[in-house]
Amino acid sequence: MSTASTFQFVESDVRPKDVRLATWICFFAWTFAVYDFVLFGNLLPKLASDLGWSAAQSTGINTWVTAGTALVAFAIGPIVDRIGRRKGILIAVAGAAVASLLTATVGWVAGIAAGLGLVFLVLVRSLAGLGYAEQAINAAYLNEMFAHQSNPAKARRRGLIYSLVQSGWPVGSVLAAGSVYLLFPIGGWALCFAVAAIPAVFIVIAGRWLKESPQFGHRHQIDKMIKHGRVEEAQQLGNKYGIDVSEKASPLVSVFRGESLRSTLTIGGAFLLNWLGVLAFAILGTSLLTAPDGKNIEFDNALLVLVISNATAFAGYLFHGWLGDRIGRRNAIGIGWILCAVSFFIMLQAPNGNFPLIIGLYSAGLFFLIGPFSALLFFTGESFPVHTRATGSSIINASGQVGAIIGGLLITATLASGGGWINATLWWGVLPILASGLLIFAARNVDPSKVRKD
Image (cartoon, rainbow, N blue to C red; front, side):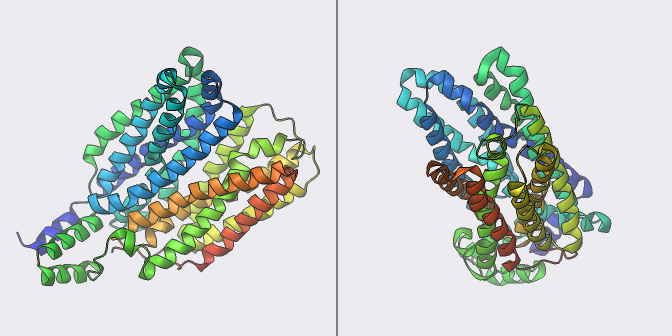
């Protein structure tokens, strides 16, 4: 069989049912990666209490874990651009499962030596960065799989379909809270983490039926030809599939060159800035709402916060996925984040004690804060060629964790100096969100009606 016919076979081998299977597996892989990711945040206070860690130690551990998560999430991108999307998904799923299992043993390790337990926990939870990286790998993989969608109607709804996959975040968050409610009284935090690893077994088994994306297959074959001196054949195949054969540098180098450089800087910068807002209003939102120097609301019902935030996020994902298919994903992201900044600014200025008004504005802010991420991650995949797609997506994804670290330091410093929650979230929440919404417009626009196949 000729090389050209081999490529034709690879492309035609991806059938609609393969795309559907890939979509469902990516959804469940992301859902349970979030499950583990959120579980750690929910149980850290209990874990610290059991192991005798002070509040300062607990905060310090979380900062180091966030840094480790960013490093691992960054490192996996170039690997996926080398070994393939399918293997990358399975590695991310398995890594999150191993992290869950090892987290369950932290108490035993800390029993040997308290200092060893701290280091062990940071290393183990850094490994969970593979789970966080799942969304970046999914974005690269599904971008390439959806590009071969034969149904024109489904091809026009790619953003909406991907938003359903990304909705694994609120689904996983609710599952994590539910597992704590059911399992913690039985076996404590160790049992919660042990059970979190079980779904990965089924996802890895199902992953055996995943097809590698044709775009990666094309690029991988071209790289092999060039390596074996068959440059002319590689050039012919590159021309056939619209792949730049002249780019021979590693993905980690190429992502800072040419068209990839603009996407890396603009989307990555916007992602980093926006995560300051995510930290201020989504992760620390309950503190802002209940603090005397915040909105001073009696908000003891944590379940209500959970339901509001995750229902709002779910609706936001679907809306921005749908909107991006119509006006372009870059435009949907930018408009959403600007409206988010406006919503949170008005909420901060609203009179304290007006529960319905504040929660209404808070929900609107979350809708426009979290929702655009479904469009952003798919937009990231559209903004890079196949050679750098996973690397670029992973760098941008990891920049969110860097933003969380920066935001944490800035908010802590503001509170420590007596600035209060209103000032802290205005300066390090509202303004960065507004800046992220403006910066994303500097990224190259992508016509949502066109499918990128390189």
